[in-house]
Length: 112
Image (cartoon, rainbow, N blue to C red; front, side, top):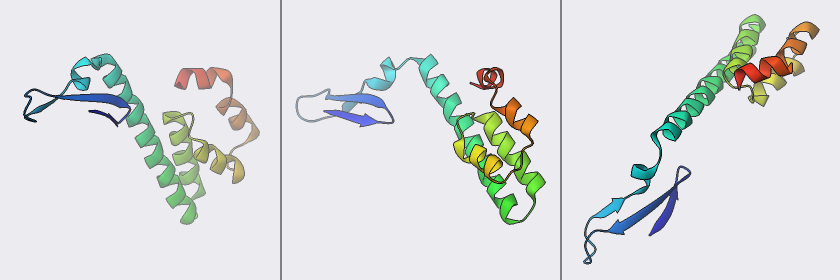
């Protein structure tokens, strides 16, 4: 039986011919380093999403300074968080200098 769960190809085999206990071999062969890297990426995306939502809440409460900080934090956590970038640019929260620093190749390279 072959299934796909969480991007990991899982292979389960019966240890007995009578349909007994099934053993999952994918986790034992999945490199620990890759699992740690995946957890790190997921953690950064989760914290970026939380910062973005905090920014949206501040926007609805008309606290634009706090919203700007939250959106900037979201971009610092995950440079690919387009929604936060869109809110910063669309709401004109950034100065021209801040925008240039934000999208410069050097700052993006240090955060990826």
